[in-house]
Amino acid sequence: VEQIPLPLLFMRTVIQAIDAFPAL
Image (cartoon, rainbow, N blue to C red; front, side, top):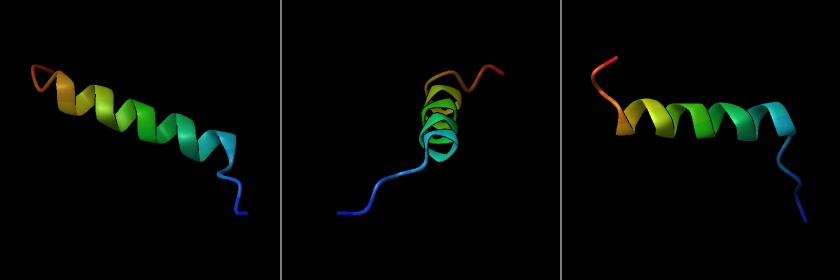
């Protein structure tokens, strides 16, 4: 089972947030 590194998971969440708020 591959474990996703925490920093990478955090970056994914940030990217999703940016996608949700294109006003930035």
